Image (cartoon, rainbow, N blue to C red; front, side, top):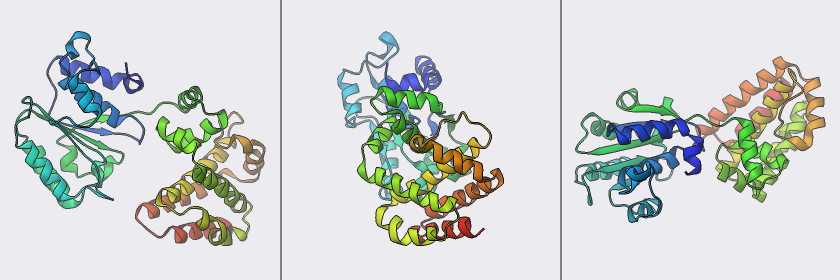
Length: 327
């Protein structure tokens, strides 16, 4: 049994029963955080629907021609779409609809997997809605999202929504340790991402490690309300973090630190993300009130929204420094 099936046992059981009973619906929305296993489950469903040996063990065999083509994303009756740049464009959905109108190449069934469906342009979303309102033939659409709230209500109403829960922090840390990370590495990367493969990649990424060190140094200035925190953005932070993903990491790491500080004000038995800084974290937690920590977390969450809206990163970081240091 695959790792994703073990991780999402309830969802696996649900779809197993529907496939056995031939009650698969025409559209599902898989929603949950990145790394929860939405795409892996979609590919497992694809194999279950197309594998000729599935009903022998109620699992796809993984070795037949159909399973192998799904693994290599080359099956002619399975179409996968993901954002082209920052969005899914109307031309991609038109191409998808054209494929929907055709019969399957090797069977009557066709399956479509759309990743990050919330990133559709308005025209693309409206185009998809027309298909969902009038599905054609024996087709199934699996829509994947990390932001269900950004979808058109009319799209949501035409899909069966499947929520993908995440494993507990303790389980994620144990899994990463079992895969070779140190406890310190696992404690940090398991907070940054729920995707074990991504966590391992980050643990071995020098640029990410540089970002972690720089953010910690910036945090120390912020926590002390040192005016140098503003200058640090220009002299250190922006020369270290140069990619959009790194900008997100800066905010995420600060949120992780301040949440741990808030938790420390209520309990000493907190699994800290920055394990190597435990003594410093406890000192800062003793100096900062829970009210101040909550206020900072609200400011950081608002800053994250600005970054997601493509506001210039340096301006966002400078604003963080001004709010925390001079409030």
